[in-house]
Amino acid sequence: MSEQVRSRLERRKARTRAALVRAAQDLIAAGRTNVPVLEITKTADVGMGSFYNHFETKEQLYEAAVEAALEAQGALLDELTTDLADPAHVFAQNFRLLGRLHRRLPELSKVLLHHGLDLATADHGMAPRARRDIEAAVRAGRFTVRDVDLAMLTVAGAALGLGRLLHGHPDRDDAETTDQVTEDVLRMLGLPAAEAHDLCHRPLPDLDTVVTRPCPAA
Image 1 (cartoon, rainbow, N blue to C red):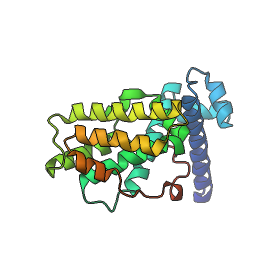
Image 2 (cartoon, helix red, strand yellow; image 1 turned 180 degrees about the horizontal axis):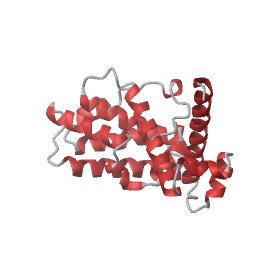
Image 3 (spheres, rainbow, N blue to C red; image 1 turned 180 degrees about the vertical axis):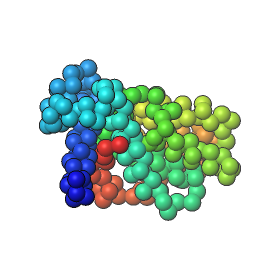
Image 4 (cartoon, rainbow, N blue to C red; image 1 turned 90 degrees about the vertical axis):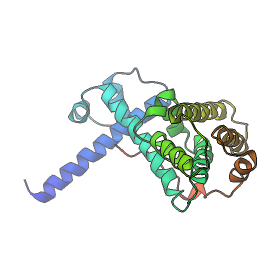
């Protein structure tokens, strides 16, 4: 087989896998995970046999779909905090942007909310990044946290609750609501109230310039 043909086949395989992952993300967001493989392949517009060329079970596909969504979200927020030196500011900005993404990227948000507090211990996405920023802020004397695991549980609960609130009340101002929750979380992490308020009123990057469809195949 020539290199050109091999390359073409690999691109076709990658497109098929990506289509299956996107279909799984759409089904998860809609709360329709208990569907046959045939419906998944129809949603992805690929042949039935293509599914088993990439995944052994539906569960394996759904895991890949969630990991892809987590990593896409985390990578997007990393891109928007590269110029910040203060770890407390990094954490605050990420939390504020995360809240706004529930409305900007509702399908992605619902994929993540579907998995609930399991996201607090995930190896991909915001969990390892939030832990990184909390630990860095503790070392820098910005946060006062005795148990990072408990802090992560509280932060994850706040983030998930915020997302559900914003989806359930579309008339609520997402920016104002998110910033209020972020202030509360920052104070819980040990930041003085005045500093928490200041961090939550600083300018944010323009999400419209970077948000596309952040759900590539894992």
